[in-house]
Length: 212
Image 1 (cartoon, helix red, strand yellow):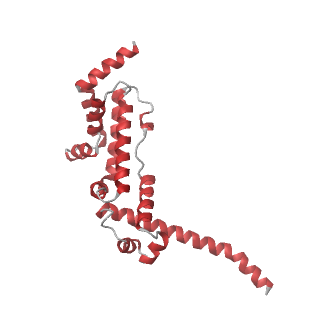
Image 2 (image 1 turned 60 degrees about the vertical axis):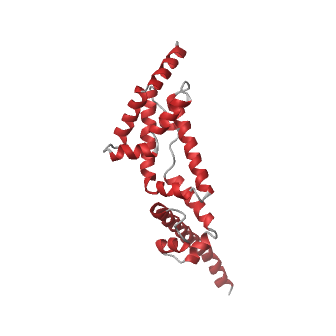
Image 3 (image 1 turned 180 degrees about the vertical axis):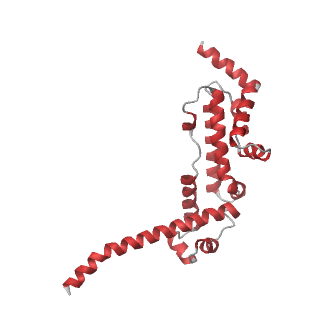
């Protein structure tokens, strides 16, 4: 009896470990199914039953992992951030001048817009009814402007930043893509447009003055 009990105890960690691995895999499958559905039809139009069907589990299993829809949305957002992180100012490291900084930033942002494109329009609709989506998009806008300001340099004024932000926006990427440009060509075009603008020229003169 004691030997049998001892053997059962020895086996239990293995069984619990296998169960934990299975639960982790199921949770991941649920999140990936949710992310795909959000891209296809938006957050507000995706139900627990939709997620369960796509993940190949029961609605009860989804609710076991995510008791509230808000929990599922938050976890899905974290997965999206991990899979497709927004560019940071690290993309500017090594740039020799402002033109190269703008090109590198535009290329990084356009690559990100391309990754996010399938669900971006749905997010614009979802933000009307989901405060957390609206807050996230506001954060994206603020980070976008900050990146553009960094790329343009300390002498850039609000108008320059606004122009740079517009030229590296999702809408700009989509228009350039529809015109037949890939990410690299589109980024180079944006860099030229910024360099040729009167505001940019004035800013460049200010920067030169500060260096002398």
